[in-house]
Length: 134
View 1 (cartoon, rainbow, N blue to C red):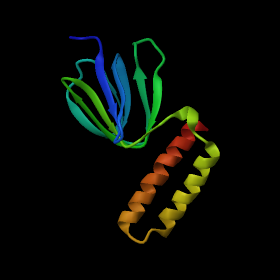
View 2: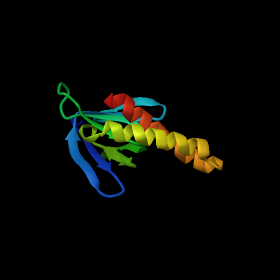
View 3: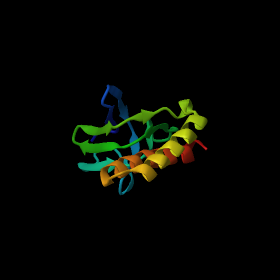
View 4: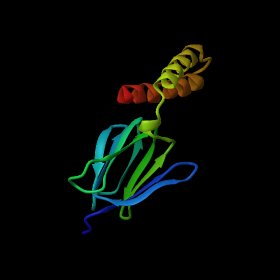
């Protein structure tokens, strides 16, 4: 048994992180879960929230915001396929508030279920991010 977990975070554009870590806490759709070395294989969708990456068991976590995605734990480690990751230090709260207003308008103006679902997903991640950075 190894005392680290191989972590890869991949976005559509590039590999965002490739590291050996002690633990990762992921905001799964059905609740947060921790991935550690020798974790049982599983898959989960990811809801908007913070991924906490612990390089060591006693260290402070690196925190990354993820809009949505998919997490897979296998014998080779944890792979996160992220729609988009957002650096918390670079969030413009004024721009974020305007985006929330715009997304709410898109929800209200949606002409069909598909457009409404897309607008609601956009609104959801923006609201979650706003709560985190406030």
